[in-house]
Image (cartoon, rainbow, N blue to C red; front, side, top):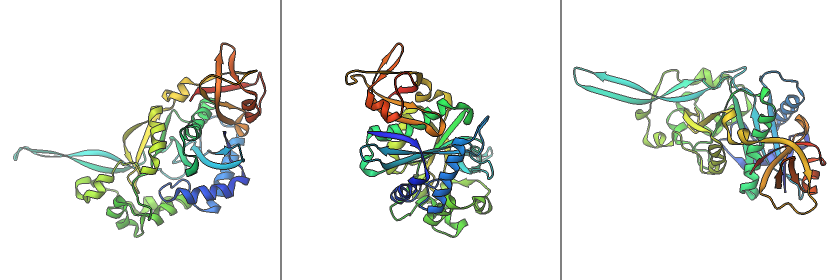
Length: 337
């Protein structure tokens, strides 16, 4: 079975392995030991901090295969991006060019550099070992973050977004970057993506063009890549889209992958989650699969298990209680898988 819990320093080697496996394009999860260690430290501080309103906190979770206690995935939440440095995106909009004399009226799509997502909570770094990319593991890991947000709404903003990985090949070639970004950064996509993950992002503001980019002036391959999801991210994207996330016309400035967003309270997991006490079952659970969480902040745990909703709470097996570190009567949170 699987369990999601907050990251710890002992998980660093596993995170390095996952980052290497994830490859290029997941900027907020770089294959850099020092940066990953910093992310663990930041996460631990965030879980231990009393928060009245969101700031620069960042929460990182790992997915554990409880059969062998191996770390097989990770994910996270940034409480608010753009706190120190603006968070840049391209907004897709139209520019009107008209000549009444010639009776010509053209609406031309263009990319506008903006930081509209600054000050917004972001879901980050959903990475799962290839051998465990099944429906239960992927849904558990992705939606565990939403259960955490539902439990601690004061730590996050009313708007939530996620960046989906854009098109690039296994060698790190991005047709969008090749047509646009490399002319201003003088480096390939792989290096720019890596620097964005491990260094101060001021270089983005210093080097990116300030004026709108007219989409028809880009090569056809670059135009076709705008808003397209990398094939390796299809499954994680589907989970979020089923939750209620929507594309609102924002794409990544490096690979043009789409950003999707939603009002936090409207997401399915958050709207449908329930809280009550855990009840014990004497027999094997026959009810449907549920995502079940327990524990406060740094002791937060989420698992997937069969359970039986009852008037007084949720009836779960003894093995499920042990996995969560609770007993009958403890307060738990759940939502149908």
